[in-house]
Length: 480
Image 1 (cartoon, one colour):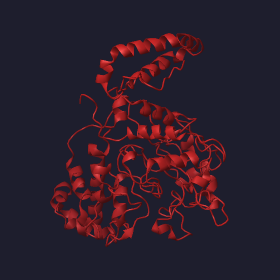
Image 2 (cartoon, helix red, strand yellow):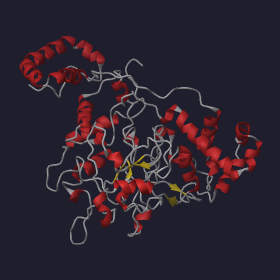
Image 3 (spheres, rainbow, N blue to C red):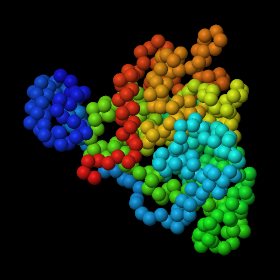
Image 4 (cartoon, rainbow, N blue to C red):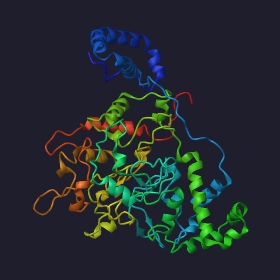
């Protein structure tokens, strides 16, 4: 008798409490049969693992009803009116006049209606003076960054009086340490070895304020030629009087300070406005005991967390923190995954060009730390089901292809990578051979070898995707 039945009794719907109520007698009878048939197994299980009995019983309850048998109290961001600075930042965020084309704002690539990601399915966005220049990478979502730490390598320093340690020093001290294997649900030792924190795919911005100025000056995005160029546009903006009220009349005559305060305001808007961190997904409500998951979603969640199967939660942390903060579905660390080259990108038409993430080409402060070449920031999976392109180069357009990559990269690389003229599979074709040792081959499901059975079946992948759909904000639980 299995302690974790995968199906509900025929007349019970996990999504329909009314159906459950109407079928109460059926459920009671079915549950009694389960208990009667499983009592011997439960007794044996209790004799071996007495400390696990509450979990086993809770799992049965979860499987039957779809409810969380151990609801938690989540500590959510406060809901309060925006400060005057954040209100100013909101206007800047939506202002297309701050771009060289006059047609692009922050919201053009970070649409509120699309989880602050792109509103279209382009692999990279168009920008520049005439909105014809292709970008370099897909814009990540701006959601759930309110707890993002600055970029660093290694654990936080505890001695506040000690001299700051440079990234180069930290990387050098980590170079001889074996990389930690990540395990779903267990805090890894990896922070001692790998970069963490920061914004953009390569972590080159440490704060939301730093991040906001990047697109303003990028020649293929908003395409301002200098900070002075941005300041000139701000002086002509309709909200200049708000700047003066907040920072004094002289702000208009101090271009560098004007731009600094403008970008600070954008950062405050992202921190204060609840739409950037809603925590209104079905999974959030399930954690709190306010929603029920379907059998497919429950099964997908277990596979997502299972270190022998998908092992997604090793990097996309799925459990609340010990102090009740809701999970962000990222460990904010960096991984070299070896995704295939996207030959559709204009920047990749040059066969000698490689986007190597942390060690360049769009940041150069750690370019010599070659143990990090090919590493990119692990993004949140919240609202991932609403995205149209995935990974730093936009090579995949749906979650099924993303999951196939994880599942087949090592066992069936011929299904992931192209072949050369001789028919040889060009594995890891988007990273120079001398850096391919950085690619993760230790963590499941990447720990398998060519010819091994893949970690997941297609049906299991579909259930994992069903679970990832529960991470989309805007769910309305019954009774609300």
